Image 1 (cartoon, each protein chain N blue to C red):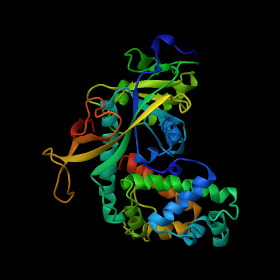
Image 2: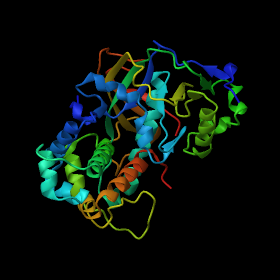
Image 3: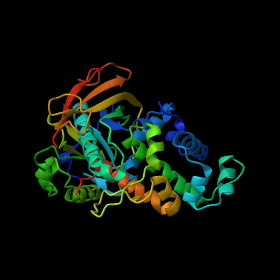
Length: 244
Length: 136
């Protein structure tokens, strides 16, 4: 079955997209920064995540900063809770503040040179390939069927997919591209950022023995970059709400 | 900012990664030779650029670096915490879960040294599960 052009969108050249990585990608050699969109993290993953099986190249992006922060904050919470759950065995204390890098990425060419990006934010699109909208928006981590659907969508010739972020309360979208984009990046701008956990009283979470975590919110701030603000985020701590 | 060798895939970058790990994480050529199951002199000669390393230990070293980055991510990229974690004994527990560290009953450093290359993937998968998986 060929690509259904009425259900596609374009990841457009010159439009900013966003991605967060660990800080080690922010190296002194800026020619290495485009590795942020080479999809190798997904290749090296043995289990995969929402829209990729383990070992399958995928480049995850968001269309706005809020969705990017909400997605990453969810996984910061998961990581902290998993570490806390294992603390009595590992003796590795979880940290409640995290250094990361936000990347603002622009592509040189539209990602539709061959085929297009399947747009699952179009209400008519999910049912076309039997994708259940509930699973797309499910804030838990029931990903098996979505991985299966991504494989099928890729087999139909699409270059990626666009879907609503299950974490972002503001309705932002994520993009999952199926090919290495590292040679298609004329402009990529790093911003050093920090995330921190907060308590149920909206105070910094400092002590796992006494504090109670806010399970659907954290805080973020920009600590360095070419501009003092990205989206609505600046140098002051600001709330990041997300679905958990 | 981080040095280029963190994400440069050349052989000289691989040597710089080993140098960095030995300095920052307190491990030695002896550790690497035990973990890679190769002769220590062979490893040291390669590190000093006076000898070659065959493909398999080089690939294992690359994988060990990726695993180290996963672990450092859990530790906020604070190398001192990596040094401590390598020596930390992991408690044995009768209650087994999928997120149990694979090095229970020993330290992470001893686990790498005793189990060899197969330990690298197991620790990498554990770190990935901590970062991305549901608890069960």
